[in-house]
Image (cartoon, rainbow, N blue to C red; front, side, top):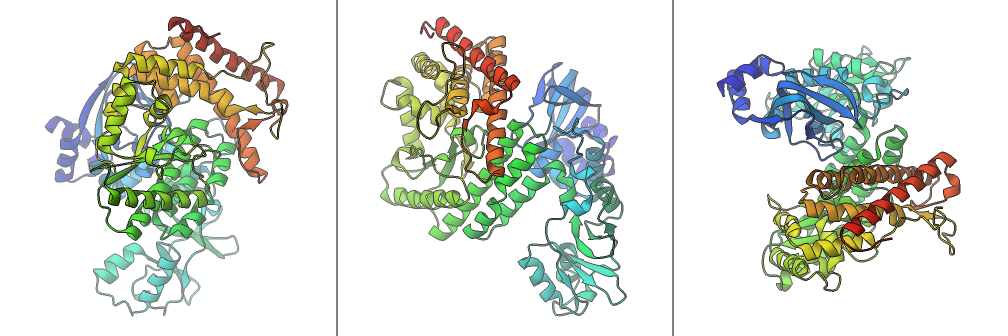
Amino acid sequence: MDEVAAFLRAHPPFDALAADDLDRAAAAAESLAFADGETIFAQGTEPQRAAWVVRTGAVELVDRGRVLDLLAPGELFGHPSMLAELPTGFEARANGATTCYRLPAGVSRPLLARREGMRHVARTLLARPTPARASADDGAGAPERPVGALLRAAPVVCAPDTTVRETARRMTEADQRCAVVRLPDGGLGVLTDGDLRSRVVAGGVPPDAPVAAAMTAPAHTVGEHRLGGDVLVEMLDRAVRHLPVLAADGRLLGVIDDVDLLAAERRTPFHLRTAIARAPDADALVTAAADLWPTVAALHEARVAPEHVGAIVTVVADALVRRLLDLAVAAAGEPPAPFAWLALGSLARREGVPSSDVDCAIAWDGDDDDPAVRAYVHGVARTVLDGLERCGLPSDAKGATADRPLFARSLRAWGAALDSWFEDPTQEKALILVSLVGDGRPVWGVRRPDPLAARIRAARTHPDLLRLLARFALSHRPPTGFMRDLVVEHSGERKGRLDLKHGGLIPIVDLARWAGLAAGAAESATPARLRAARAAGVLTDDDGRMLEEAFTLVSALRLEHQVQQIRAGERPDDHLRPDDLSPLTRSYLKDAFRAVAAVQRRVGAELSYGVV
């Protein structure tokens, strides 16, 4: 521990820590070694639960295969994802033999939240390239945008003689962390949450005193055209967290805070997620969720990669589920048994798009036949699903939802069902159910570790199940015809359209699920499963790469199509007119489908299925 503490002490922001805090960080640090080229964490994966420090060697920050930065010993990484609780913006990859310290969030988050830590975080973020934007010419990240464009709400404004109590009430109603006070001389003061804690609760200023007795004045202000990055540094240098923003003519436009700026280019989904977490009821959730699809459109137009957009959709969907469950449980009373909510389908794989529906399941501790438990979880599930429908996330049309008995079981019953399906996968619906549950991801209420995860990974020890899963995957053919043209619908309202989901993505997703389960992959995301299958030799390196590239292409076209529909006020779907594509894109798409079909033939031949 002394060696770790000595190393950390030599690098910011740890050099500013008191001895006790430094010892606590050193004691919690986990030393991990990585080989040259090894991925420390992938791009677009779930939020980091730790901050990382390079100890020896170097770490590359990689954006979609392109190295944007090289970190030396002592430099931090992974902390923006941890602090914002959003998917990772970069891949972190070892450059040469590398050792890193991993500092769990429980220790690193409080340290980085201090003034010294926030100053260091801000300066390193502003100096670092922005993922998915490095080649963009629109400078869409918050550090490069004027603060006037980052304001998200009208300010709370009051007179100096307004009481502290009344000012705090207005702040609460407006969900604001500060209020602006107009002074008689034309200047401004500010009352913040911090002022309320330090001067009213702890400092003795009575709630019925005028706000002038508790405010900070005069407040420093900034012009609306100042860049976010410059304002953030100034904010940290002045040790303030809120700055009033003025128009060129002196009008008050709003208040910018450090959270607005530190959220960088993901500011919009960050605040969307925050609004969901704070929603007092289902109606407020509906209002907050109305920004989800416009946010997706904005992210797409800002050149954010489809896998990142899918991860952000999933983060928001998870937040909606958690808040709806919290509200439902509060209304229904203490549950008769602890239970967990599992995401299934595309949202479980973190591959959500505007057309995604909600597949889900419930598992509880206790007796599977307990009528009180069944009635309780059914009522809660119905409430949550109704709420999600109102928020623009409809339930699965085929009934793979937690309000159906097939998808609501005790943990013991789920375990027994999985064992039964693994032993005899020829049972009715066994392959479909294994496919759904195999993608499952706990969202709310689950114990750690996930009690079903180990059983799912045990699928690799059941060869009969794997062979039938492979056959199931190979039954979905890409839409290429005998003449190598794209196969489209020939009748009905979708005549002349190509189904990107069932014809393009599902053959890849199903192959990846089979290959990932055969490889014992812990992650359920399609690209991660394909990489695990390549590493384990279940798929050849070439086949795995071709499938991943095809998945990326089809996902990008699908998202582009749905964003256009959102902009046109249409309901998003997966049916694209091939004639709307450029000749080059159409050619790429046909090549991708042919590549998937070729992989299917090779896999089928190796497993003696005779796929043609």
